Length: 398
Image (cartoon, rainbow, N blue to C red; front, side):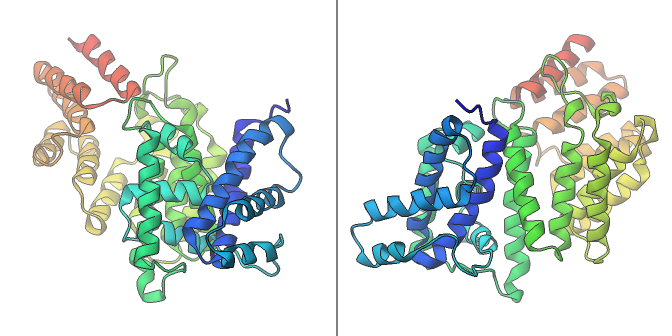
């Protein structure tokens, strides 16, 4: 038994499985077939590498398994067999096709759940079982999403390419949204787990890959900075019982200041393009928190201005909720509550809305109403860390 660390195994597979898939798709000419071959190779690696160790050339190992598997199973089309028989690794003078792969997986013709599942499976090399475990859904559900997505790609003739310049902005927005959704689910799960480090790792890796492939796109840098700024305080986010620690109560000495500084450097470089976007603004807001050595040093007026700008570019009830939180510290709880009350209809099923309302009501001395709001928030969340925090509040104030 070699005892390969799971984190190292995941890192190597992310790097090389996506590269293999990106090379096979244009050579074989069939997205679904190439994806199946890569998944067979990934499954074999997950079975063998923990026992034998990661090979010196993991890319060649994965290619050999994929090629052998393809020659074994591809009976229906002699054309595929001829192509596979001629393939050698590494493919001579092959460019990095992973950007085409990412844009194909995130094509707007596919549903958002299918985009997420396909990206994690093809680009990151996760198996269906791993994706299902990460999102706490049945494996059959993920398998169906992937199967439907591959059929849609084939039936609709979705091209394997980076979009043309006039198509790039909306398509890049799709890609960034998928990565952002993966990170959000990893950072604070909507299911009955506190968080998923694996999904957070995958999201950061995808954002880093995209930043490497598209260094001149400022929103890509903004998203990478946002993810890394959030992850820099991972060590302080949960208490010993697994409950969430509010930002104001976190031990800031546990924050990774080197990671904060590096992320702010990425954000600063992105800002030099003078093309602000939602991810850059969100990262700037998190940077304001990260740069404050104490909770009392937080620059709330600047944060509220950034939320005003964010609302102009990307208006949503959740952003208005976050701006109301900033209003609490610039204009007081009564003004914040007035902003919050305007969101009651659109955020009725959102637990953080009710938890925030409870804090504002408690600031105003309306403890009975605050307890009701906390109970409503508790009834809406499955996340155990949120449940623990809300339970503590109810115990403390009732």
